[in-house]
Length: 420
Ligand code: BGC
Image (cartoon, rainbow, N blue to C red; front, side, top):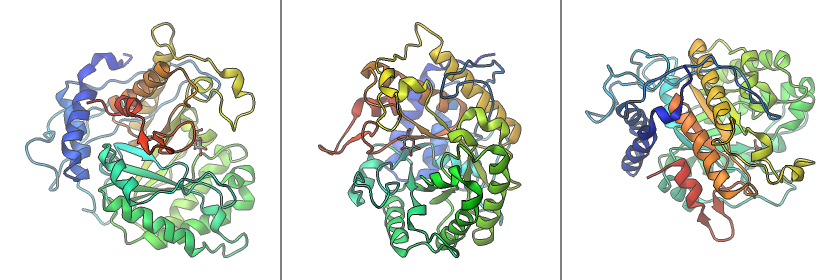
């Protein structure tokens, strides 16, 4: 059966209402469970699909993946949370799992994934190269505002490669650590879980063998630096969007090596890993998960690409895409998203891993109503499968939710993300 979000129209709104109600209490673990509780209360059963999807130039198509499971345990909220015996919004009911940090091997990744339920990517901050000028200042007040908008987590894209020596031992500059420390502290004090995302290491994708040791050395240092952070406050993401020469054949063994390197420093931290082709869902079928029980799988979603990236300044020829519409009433654009997300859920069920939709977003050049419809459609698809999600992004030009001149928020897009 093809799972259709319209089977369950109230669930997302109820989830949003619950999230809004509890987010002010700053109990992020409760928030994640409340979202699931609301989905369950909305009568949103799970379903899977084997329906192949069509594809577009960004990669729409068939594949697979998961559904997050839920949890209860000693720290679960009292009666308002989902009872353990209730079915979960996933295609596979799971048994109760221990709360974070209950076991020596670290927290349960499904539970950590609940903390990432509504993540905001902090684009245009620490991802910016040293010699570029488009970085936005981000300070404590911004984290307060992000939490107030209802986000549960922030994904911090960081261009670590700009701050590491180019030769062994590839030492990272203390300056970048101080900046990351400040961001983590601001996130923590606002109840936001933080993802340390190693971003924009394009040299790694262009020439993997030349950069492999450097990437591993950077992660040893990062994991050593943050090994004492609580595991529900900090999560690692090893490499944003491996692509080009970094094929699955190369990436799979490097990924295993990276996880081993991190575990040597920080055995209990949840680690986010993703497939090649810019974290494309279609490449999940080629991803070999490292042998580790504390992983979350990520994918990025920008399909139809000519719609979301119309007019993108960094993509040659994208001006020709201006005017591309997203209209699920007239064509199969929405059904393709649904089918692809169902495939992701199915793959993840088979692998028993939780899923984080780490990036999705659309440029401001798209038709305004289409843009909101796409954001809502994708976000609902993620919610319905129990994927946590991260919107791209906070402040980058053309995609950010925050207007950098007026310091105001795009409230319509916020409503598409978190109605109510
Ligand atoms: C890139 C951004 C880009 C976004 C959407 C991110 O991973 O780092 O530069 O705007 O994807 O394409």
